[in-house]
Length: 443
Image (cartoon, rainbow, N blue to C red):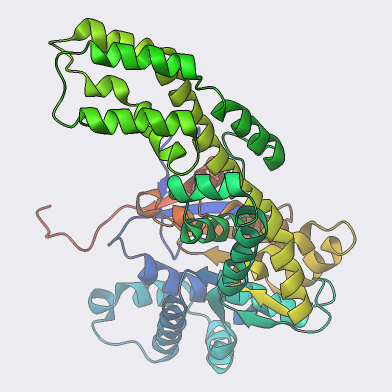
């Protein structure tokens, strides 16, 4: 298959899943669950796995995992039972598997599988990582099993409040900026929570030392000189046409007074001054509008506003940098781990030069094939876990099942590009479920 060739149609009974990476693209309504629930018995019957617990199926929710296990059980029961007279028309999938695997040894395999069906490892990625930490805790850095908590939201909230108290409440300049430009603790908590869920990220602009940014803001705020305000006041006196939302003359005078005196309301006045050109009617006073916009005071105000926005961004990044080690230390002290922390822990253990090779060998001895459902919503850490365990081994297979059109969890760190890159890597083993069962036949 060349890179430009279309993927092959997937047949759960006959399509060859080679060692290494394969991708099955399955849009909504194309019978994905049906195909996978029949694929597992096929892999058992054709000898790809010797036992059901050698196949790992990961999906996005516990309900989906439970439903999948139940469907596999029903397929196995149907295959073990005697065929129905009209099976080829009423249950073609069962008939197809029965015809292909009709030897006595296959019935023995089905009997053993039904006894062991509860050992089928169908779960979410978080449950999978939790099992690894439970069974291989020493290799994962947790010799004593930690308590699993949903998230570290309370710790993050407390840490953000402490930063505000220690950095903002004790600094008159910074507290004035926070109050007048409407910084919100809740916004910082949300920002920190989102970035702490990511192991690796880049920001634009990048993080700078916060003390340096605060010093630069001090310098910028001294940029509106009395002479420039006098010049602007003279320009505004000559304006003959004002827009409706322009402040009244008394308000303009008060604004200029606050800028000359500093103190309370200074940063609010700076923000208002930066928009002074919009006060002037654009068609009736074009010359005055241009002069106001180009004035030294308005340009300085615009620069201060830009610096204040930069300060706000850098404060958020500063919070992340300060709080990450605090939360990590608190979790370790409490012997607790979050759902996302489970993924990070297993990821780091697999990449560890000391413990990674041993952990990989143990997991490869346990699992031969992995089926990763909803893989368009995996993130780079999760895919690296699968890659380390199941790729670069002639005896293991990694099968991704997904649909990039349904990628909806970017806000959680999921990255559809991870799936698309994997699809490009699997160009020689890419399949598609290309028939929809949700549309009327004419469509």
